[in-house]
Image 1 (cartoon, rainbow, N blue to C red):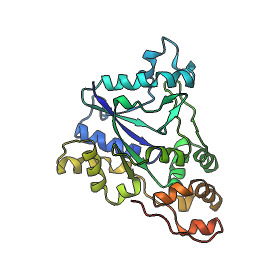
Image 2 (tube, rainbow, N blue to C red):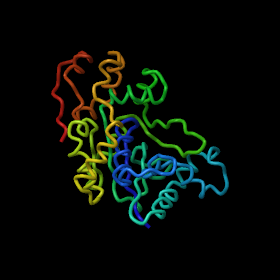
Image 3 (cartoon, one colour):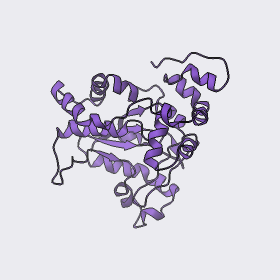
Image 4 (cartoon, rainbow, N blue to C red):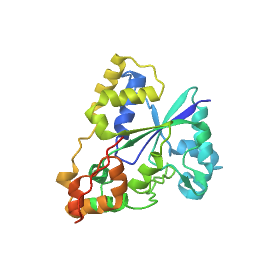
Length: 269
């Protein structure tokens, strides 16, 4: 029996890029018979992990309460299937829902939490959801938000952007926090920190190959300046001011937008 390392984030915050990098690193570029890389990082909410504990009840008819109750069993099933550690993706916030932790600690080795400027998240998330920006801004501001789930998956409690970030970024030596902006500015340093955190023995050549293979998965910063209206920016920065300041995303222009005296942004540690 092994343990789980969580690859956690609010949606569209670098999770796909990180998964592509880790897949390239573990497989060293190998492809399956279909020509695609093997599945290395699994989604936590896949039905295959939950169905064994539903007593033949269809997954799509299970309630959130029922799914929350069997979540620890699903996580332990993932851990039992690996000899070392499993890499598991989640967009859920770190907390308790319907009386059950969203992460099962007795099979958890640690977590990598990825974050990104919420203004850029709004642009990319809107495209991903195929919803307009007003709808996506409202979703990012929605406390305790649970997106609709498909028939073959359990649910995720994502929460608002700030709720998600705050839940995972309390000081803890078993959680590595990485901003996508820092990953873009110095990818070698960021990914080296990642593999060291995962206790993986990786050569400089292996690291470089995995980075090259996954580079196209990243999005450039600053998308929001061309895509968001002033009103949309104001709605986001007003809701997420504390967290944006904590992680260095606050700009003086946001004070001007909210029509108040400028305050200095807090530097990201």
